[in-house]
Length: 197
Picture 1: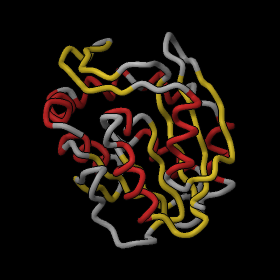
Picture 2: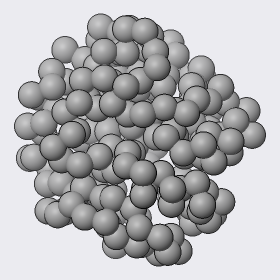
Picture 3: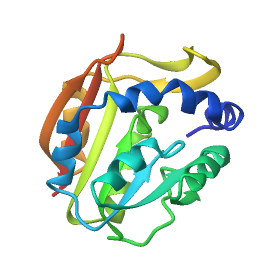
């Protein structure tokens, strides 16, 4: 994640937490169930934000470690009772094979398209053989800095088509085991559950 995007999250962490509460209240159970059917043991939440995703995973019995590039987001997830670390998507501070699952929901959309392969390689490295990846992205065709909703400062976004993500996942040795679209408001979310192959 680049510095302007990190700075925005540091400055507006509480605004983001308030703005996205509705999203997790309506998040489809089917996506979580698909992830739970493949993941095992400890789970890493990459780009955890304030920890709302982690709360969902904890309700399913997982031991969740939160990682975010924003110090303020790590402060919030720690306050929610999670072991939380500041870290970069492209250099995860964990040994090989540390996790039975990685949850990366709308976090890698902050990586440029030219860099997402590096992030996926790091995720694959820290996953156990056969471990699960949940990848949530937003449908679209462009990548750019933008403001959105109540977040009145710039963040980098990369939007993808379904086939584009399928190609990227397969190229990075992830087997897609489940796909679902989710449109809570105006944006269409593309949700993949994969297995490290």
